[in-house]
Length: 222
Image (cartoon, rainbow, N blue to C red; front, side, top):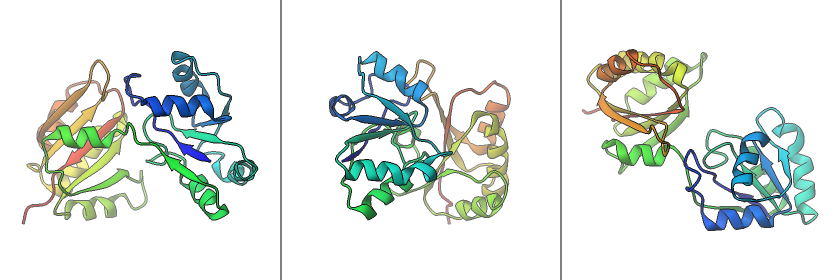
């Protein structure tokens, strides 16, 4: 069995009892960054062996992992934070397991975009999750597509690219489109700021931005 195990995005208390049990019981934990995951395991006194599984090696090792799983080894896949496979490595391994007849179970748990979306105050009965935009090729095409959506859309953004992203959104969506910047979710300095795109650009242009960003933008109003 391959278990997909969500891990806290900040506050270490945001892990389920089931996740802790699975991490203790499996034979091997596949981790995006073993140093990050080791800190979590040490906090909960979990001594399961770790092996690296990340974007740079997933193509090379997926076949070998499926062979081990097929032979009866239970494994858990975790990312640095949140649910593996959501803008993180995992899809290729899950697909290979499904093709090989290996059972896959995904535990419910932390992910950054849902609490940000719900806490933003923007409509969330329908939404589009985009994740990270391309850095170069295809970026403008995606932005123009998103600007025309009639419902809320969600982006992930790195702190050093936030101002660029907000500026581009002002250009394609207009300055007064409602939006929200959520950062440092579940941590001591959690910040969720809802305003117009141009107001957000002004606010974050005056401060140093740290922590991963969830950017939520309201849909186009006809």
